Image (cartoon, rainbow, N blue to C red; front, side):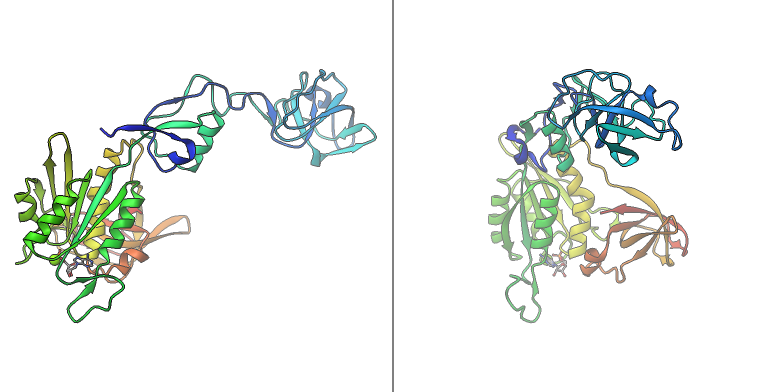
Length: 388
Ligand code: AMP
Ligand code: MG
C-alpha cells in the first residue's frame, strides 16, 4: 500500500484521497435564496393573478453575507439578493423579474409556492456525513466540495514513480534526422503522457541499445523506482534481450503473451527487493501496441497501486458503420471514432489498423473491442467500445 502524506488542497489536485472526509457543518449552512428578488410569506399570494396583483410593502433588504434582523410579517416583503439568508417568517422568494416594484411596494401577479427559490440548509452536504471517500481521484469539483467543507489540507497517497525505458538499435532522438533504417523514439513521448494521465510520475531512464550489458545497466536503474515499464524487445526476435536481461536481474515472470491484437508479446513480472515489490511491465515496441497494452494492463494496475477506488473505463455499445473481418483467435482493440447520431452511438474505425500506425490512436476517441470468437461484423451490428 502506498504511503500517505498531507497536502494543502491545491497540491492535492489529481491525487488520490487517502482518508474519508467528514463534513463538520451543513452545506449550505443556512437556508438561502438562489435568486435575486423578494422574500415573502407564500400564503399572501394564494389569490394572486395577473388581473389581481397582490401588493406587499417592502420592509427592508438583505444581501449575501448579511442577516435580516427583523421578522417578516404577512403583508410584507424583503428585497433579497442571491445567497442571502432567508429572513425569519419568509418561506419563499419571488424572482425580481416577475414582480413590479415601486415606492416601497411590490406587486405580485402569480401564486408563489412555499419553498420557491430556497436552497435548504444541508441540502448539498449534511454535517457528520462522509462527503468524500478514501480512494477518490480529486478533480476540480472535488477540490471545490472539500473547500466548502473547510478541508484546507487533506491526506493523499504518495504518487508512485514509474520508470520507463525504451529499447532498440534503430531509435534516435526526436530532434535528429533518422538515417536509413532508423526511426524516432516516439514511445518515449506517448509513454510519458500515458503515465502522467494515469496520475503517476514518469521517470525517463533513457534508451538502451539491443545490448545485454547496456540493458542490464538501465534496467537496474529502473528497478529503483516504484514501477518499471519497458518498450520493445519482448518478442521472439534475435535481438529481443529484454526478458532475458530482466530474468538475470531477478525479475520473476508472472505471464508473457496475451491473446490480444495489437500487443500480443506483453510481459508482466515482479522484482522483490529487501522490502519492496516492483511490478515490471514489458510492452511491445510497436507504437500502437505500446499504448494499447499500457491502457489495458498498466493503467488499471497503476490506479490500484495509487489507492484509487473510483477508476472505471466507460464501456458502451455502438453500431459499427462498416463490415469487419478477423480471425477467430484474439481479442482485437481497433481504434475508433464514436459519435452521437439521431440518438444512437455510431462508431467507425480510424482507417489503417497497423500496430505501427500511431496516427490511428491520435485520431481515435475509443477502442472498438471485437471479442476473440467473433470473425465477422456487418455494418449496423452492435459492438462494444471503450471510451478513452
Ligand atoms: P520490438 O517490440 O522491439 O520488436 O519493436 C517492434 C516495432 O516497434 C519495431 O518496428 C520498432 O522499430 C518499433 N519500436 C520499438 N520501440 C520504439 C519506440 N521507442 N518508438 C517508436 N517505435 C518503436
Ligand atoms: Mg526492438
